[in-house]
Length: 330
Image (cartoon, rainbow, N blue to C red):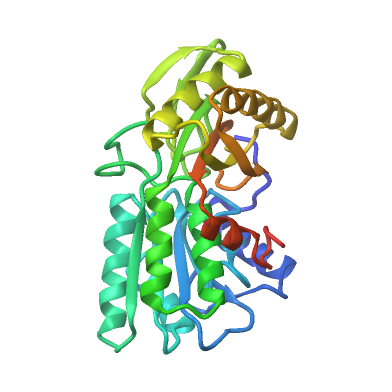
């Protein structure tokens, strides 16, 4: 295992410490574990909290700041944060308008966030939640009942965060967040596995000419292990699955997020996007917003995911609203 780390057991702590040192204008760390919050708490708005296992950076700490999250909670690599950590995060950011929890659909995440939410409600904090399940590849896997929550979660952070920043009430922020969940789909593919530091070896094996279609962000199996495809062939597979699941038709407008799973170069991502663009053009579907880069990774996995959000006027406005976080600045 070759990684720029010190002690394996300190990876998460030192990662958070590095983020806070790099971006003190946006985030600070609480004293109760790996919880980061906005440097300056903003009162009079719904506060958003999200999180999950480490290893997916910039998710989720990279999205804490103006116009997105108010707090992010990091567990160990690929491990859900504890209810106590989440509870402390909720308490730190809570306002009189309440807190919205954005939870990715993994059994541990859902259970622990819901437990923390119940603890906060006992303190008379208003709490609501949405559960993101955008992965179209599989319905149930190693860590989930139902579809997994993956890179489409970033759209929820941005759109719901912008709505909260405008001063909307908790019910309204939850409504728009749920509407994003209902209209976003993601599918990923991997051509080389990642290595969890504590394990010290790759989480699965792929042959030199193999790829895993529908891979999960923790290395969960996908829908098919097949021979390597060209970018154009892969774009065709992903476009068909995503448009079918969203029931997209000619004339619809979408946002497309092409996400590196950690080790995939920008060069490859742009090649893939060019092919995706052509596939959508052929279907008469307009791409109104595009995001290409690392948004929700899987350590150093070599692969990519594509998220598609069906757009409306409200979504477009909120996507374009100001955001100032360690990773996104608009």
